[in-house]
Length: 320
Image (cartoon, rainbow, N blue to C red; front, side):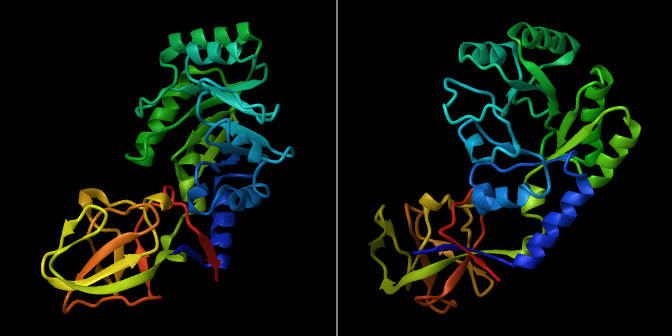
């Protein structure tokens, strides 16, 4: 059973280098390498990140140990109940409230921090000039070194709207520390840098940097079994079968992070046709049902899998 990511190696490498160059040099770009490594796995992305930046962002304190000592790990999520012993001493942690600062103090942290600013995402971050003053005071009282500021606009919205959120914060903050920004394209970023030339603005990039043009990436799963049925039930949940057709078992499931799409649409396609799921993906396989008369895959065929690569864990990567 295999969930396979097939990558056009040269196209992907070219995209990563070109996209990174558009955002800035190694001092003005932070690649994000977190979670499942955007489908590639973190080790592969870290190998590329080392050559294009001096700082690399990770999701949590539990991922920071992946970053070699030659580079600085920036942790994007505030610390909760634990700081692992594996956390590198040169890591930079994020704080978005006085509570976050107090938590780091309780863990005995004595390193650098970035202050997170609230955006329309409303996830976490200080709000307004008063909030900034309070958290800066707490950071100083704790003896931490402030490494910079960061703001994270939403995925939705235009580049102009994202620039407005960022510009709002730039008008409030002193310009002696870098501002880390995300979800902004090269053109808008350049406009910001020209308008605020006295400040260092650093681009943080993950999805757009690593995934880019989806034409160079293909996600597919092996067909493990095909059986003809006529009525009855099948699957883990004894799902009723309507009509006559074939049960197709593909080699990926919930353990791979594969799930139904919005509206409960099947993510599986073959011969440019969407295949109906008999039931939701389960563990390492998924059962599909193909009505008689429709094009049906056979054992050892590969079906296309339509999933966000930021969610899946593939079994293997095929480079071509």
